Amino acid sequence: MTPAVVDRNDDRPSTSDNFDLEKTAEEAKSLIEKIIKDVGKKSATRQLIFGSASGWVTGFVMMKLGKAAAFTLGSGIIALQLANSSGYIKINWDKLTRGVERVAEQVEDSTSDKKKGLLKKVMKISNLLFT
Image (cartoon, one colour):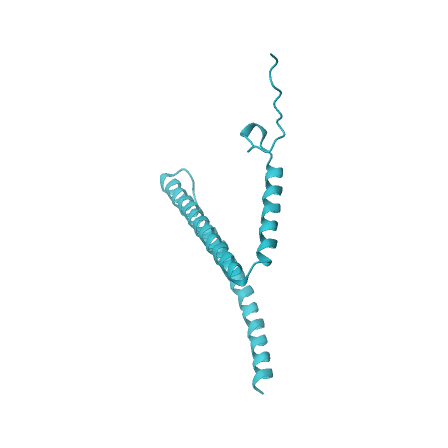
């Protein structure tokens, strides 16, 4: 008896030895596009349920990512402080404070400019509506 030939190009789930990230990403993209196109053809109730569910999932994932980022940042700050107090590194606090203040001023300037522009737009619209 001769052994059977195994075809490796079938549609079985891929294993770690033949995993193709680009192919998987393309499959996921086409699946998402198909789902979104199908939802547009469904009733308003199904669209509302799909939108609510996808919004909830997105919020849940972002919450978890935010917590992980906050934990990582906090751990890094604690590690730097421990290394500084142990003498492994020396932090120039004056230079750091000046840099943080400069960045804070730049952020404040850019946001205040946007606020002024938004205020002008609101005033213009209110003048059009109420005069």
